[in-house]
Image (tube, rainbow, N blue to C red; front, side, top):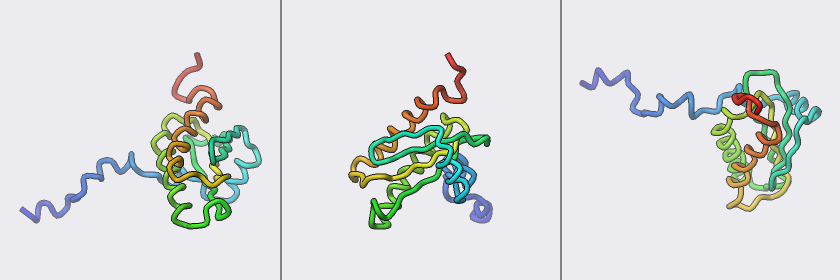
Length: 139
């Protein structure tokens, strides 16, 4: 019996791997990609401790870039936590966003209990600033 199970994964997470991932094609990874968004700035929003910049990308979906500097959060643990929360909220709401490149910049030191709340409220505000999401026809 153990020989039959050898090829199977012990973890049931393989079924959900495509849903729960944040692959490289959903990220802004190069300086020129960040510069393109920051120079065009079709949409600018200030949401709590974050500033959001967005520009159309001509690709198939939304992509995210993060700027979290040492000036606002000295400890790497805190910077990584903020980035982790932002990535997760983006990943969950990516399906309702149109094909845009988004750069999120931390501008002020956030309160520890408000990071996830601010990050969650940012995406509906972005969708409202853009107009209607790409999967719904305009009314």
